[in-house]
Length: 188
Image (cartoon, rainbow, N blue to C red):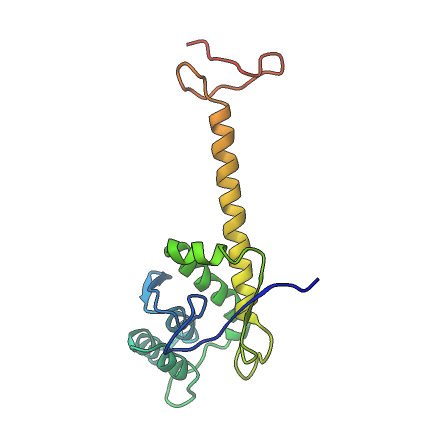
């Protein structure tokens, strides 16, 4: 049986809602960004040992108008700014957190993501750029975000059902049912 898959690509002119280029403002680490791409590229220069040049450069990335330009600036090796030395260790976790922000801060986008069901989400064959060619990192992280949101929604639904089951039908206070009297009412 063939696995259904949902394919998208980073196209700035017509970005898919799953793309890091999609214009959905997010707040990440207390800062607002125009797209996930802006947030991700800026984080390359925001570590505990970032210089003033690095922080200014991250602001420049944050304020740029277009996602493609943010990407280009984030990958630049010209100037005094330096990509944080631990970036390789944190890049995937950072992108996962940024994507989680996008889909928890924009409910309509979250609904669209959840509507993909259990389909494989796949970015184009150049997903990840030069260093992560053909790894589908964004797709894998989107599936992780989808699964996490689904699990959280299920937990909330279960908690709600549990709290409703344990309310006294008369006074609506929460009661502990006993095995002998599963539909207990409180003594009030």
